[in-house]
Image (cartoon, rainbow, N blue to C red; front, side):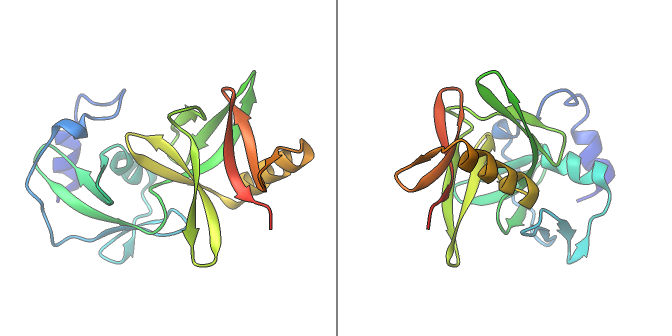
Length: 177
């Protein structure tokens, strides 16, 4: 997988996400891409420190069943993900909804489609949010604690669960012990 080739393959897809759901290239194994629990990207055990490169990669992620892949028209490369590909790093309250921001400058509204769920990780429940096209994100620590504080201050508790309201729906963010 050549960075120059990927960039060339994706030319013309600058404004929206490329249509990876339409591409069915052969599986290309041998490279190892990995996203750790903090949202750091690795290639063959080496950190990828180039933000523009990881941002480019974040636009060509596809989830098939329970596995993630980096997809171009010519290559399908496995992507191991510890928690989720996107990290939610900020939020904004607007009218009756919450706008979430990812680590790759992608914003979306917490709504019926882009909602939260709790997953089990060891002994904990972790909130995950649907970001786009069957691809999830996790909340960074600051954002998560601020949302918990907001939910507690406003008594957004139902059935021993904390939630934040957005688009007239309650989006679960944690359990009360």
